[in-house]
Length: 113
Ligand SMILES: N=c1c2ncn([C@@H]3O[C@H](COP(=O)(O)OP(=O)(O)OP(=O)(O)O)[C@@H](O)[C@H]3O)c2ncn1[C@@H]1O[C@H](COP(=O)(O)O)[C@@H](O)[C@H]1O
Image (cartoon, rainbow, N blue to C red; front, side):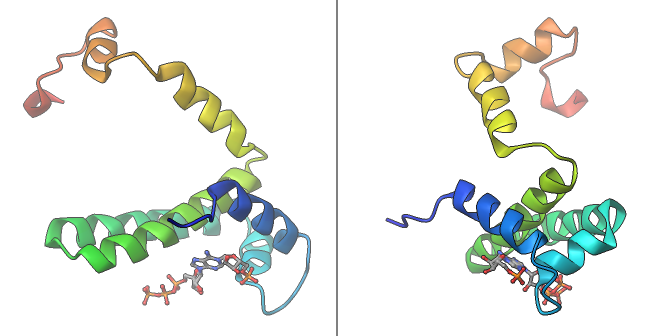
């Protein structure tokens, strides 16, 4: 099993963002700003959706990696540590998504969103 952890990638991104290395995609994204980074995140999300719908397993893995990388860049640009998101996820454990949606007064019927 891979020992690579998403928090390791968060640390790499923080280091590369400060590097000013012209060959660093991370440094380039940081200097372009949030709008460009968020746009790339959206593109990678769409590419992941296309891979999922077409059932291309290899592409799903590859596009998911691109998506997570660009998501971490957007988080970093927003000044939000990964830990804040994992804490939010942790707070949701043990709570059914359907029950949570019903508590917000929404229908859990997926056809109605
Ligand atoms: N995980 C990634 C990572 N995933 C994707 N990318 C880059 O994101 C860019 C995506 O841009 P595009 O969508 O335009 O490129 P594309 O996918 O070839 O284009 P399409 O034809 O698919 O649309 C590519 O240049 C990828 O190399 C990444 N760049 C960096 N990292 C990590 O960040 C580290 C530091 O990288 P640098 O900052 O470049 O030194 C690397 O060692 C990696 O660990």
